[in-house]
Length: 87
Image: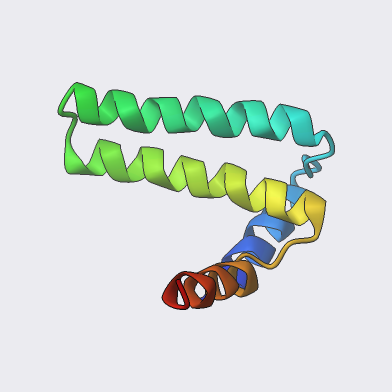
């Protein structure tokens, strides 16, 4: 499954639960919070499973933001890879 398919599956699940994201500022705040939890998992040397769950939470919030903004994360990332190769 690629990133876009993951995002669509997530959004379908959120739509079914009637909780589609609406406020991008709120999503950004949750994204920052989740990144902080990744840092905490590293700092506290939490288990691999706990760390993976926190990373998944970051992706969850990033997908929500990409959906609100109409961004295809795969395309954006591939463009960035190409740009970095050309440096």
